[in-house]
Image: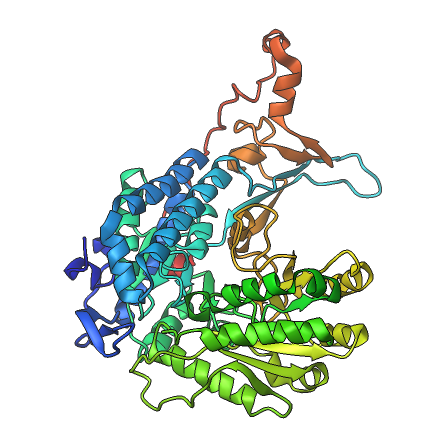
Length: 584
């Protein structure tokens, strides 16, 4: 499945494929280090392809409603197994397209499989259920109480727009895609122009193995596009009435552009953007005095790893003036001075990085403290190495200049020096939304640390203490996101089990006959789902544990038990629409 013809075309079920109205354009991937096109010709998806993918996804959405949680969990597990089975073919292709080392790609692959299996556990454990039952009280005065029951459903097909710097964990089957599948939503992946064949290889094996365990065709589709045509392709997908969600990971400018598109062409569409931010770090005097050299080394490594192309790298560091601070600054400067030039993923990213640094250095009060800088080249197709650089300014300059609050994506750091604790807190209050905020504090920093924590809590998604922010633990307590510009369009985390919340909605049934109610809402509870019933939490598993051997004694009293209840007549799964567009 290496990189041949099957990966160079859109991935759409054959029954939905359509002829393009005009000859298809093709493109080739730019080489990540040498620049210039390389690899096979890849077909740009047509408007007809976009329409077909949306229709196929809508039919697959109805097919997913017919599957039970065990079948849906098995789909995610088999996809993880299928990705692992690709072995070195996937690793070599992803490394070749992205320019990243095979070590990093293997780590991404392991993280991706961990994410898929985590969501399989979420589905199997029904962790996304929020089932509520409020039974009727017809004799209530002054007005009778109706019977109301609430369940959750996936919203429908989700368009996945991944970043350049995460070919596997952010690609065709990354966290956004896996979370949508966990919610029961089909995905339409728009491959990234920097790693389209990697996206296609993952999507192809995912669809093949998913169908082998009962997934409906169209659960996973993929469309290719070059940079010239991607805005038109995205607009065509967003505009289709069957598409109900869009996931984006990338820059604030890209998120704003896609957000505007969604607002204009799909106002009822759920939009979730995960955006890179400055991830501020505060090193307080007590920590500086006791551990400044170690902190400087760790912050440098965290900032410059993979040429600074991670969304949680620390890029703005706040310190309080003092003798230890000057030692800290000199050590950071020395580390940047010794840093070899780094290659970014593309000429476009390298050019954007150099322009961002240039704008910072042109700002009044900012100077180059360590490393080096050269003006950006005009030829964006040549991926020349970029220098690492440490810039420095006073806290009042940071507060005054909003341009310094913008992310610089690449191996650069801004050191902000405050005169005292009050100025440090004022600088913290000037920060916009960020994915992370970090505080290094010692035993004597408690008072300022508490006040700083209270300020940052309203501005970041994850507060980190005495550690670097890079690296994410996949667990229910994680928040990856934050106030704008860290996130746009939703209040939920984009990584971890709760990421699937973005793609779900609530549905209430009032006075519904048992025959039309979803199984989890029926009075007999045939699925043994934990539910909130008339304001009290009822978990059949707890009841079973408490009744023990006496459960059999109650089975003959004329009432159906939950385990033995039969579905009511007429509980057929929803019919697939004959015309998906009209059904939307």
